Length: 142
Ligand code: FES
Image (cartoon, rainbow, N blue to C red; front, side):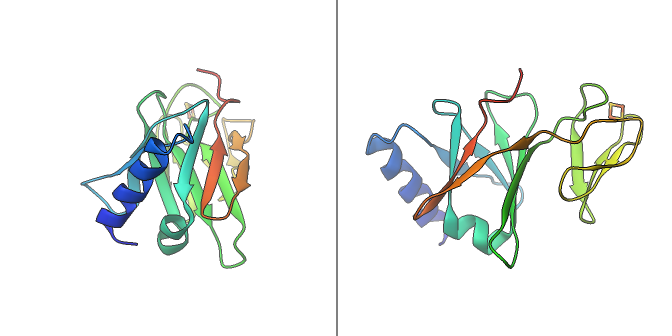
């Protein structure tokens, strides 16, 4: 799906009254997209995630981004990119999450590899629908 189709498709879904999504393609990188919450949920077109494998969602209403990935087995995982040590954004690179504040590291499934963080990243549930994935962000404590 190209950028124009992606924007058109997401806008059509919004106008169609699903009340679930509005996503705009980001102008800076191919994996970062801007998104909005609708009823605590975010909808991602399946084709977009399958083609990119990893998306970082910058949510207007949330202080930290949301990570979502799809692997070769079509397993989808989503995490809130807030360090569990203190309030700080984690970065994703080399298949791990890093916190540059005090050095905590988490594996690609959000589990702590190295402290000082003791808790895993908050995993968000994802529903697999026909043409989209729906991330439930209602468990995020803002
Ligand atoms: S805030 Fe992330 S390691 Fe301390």
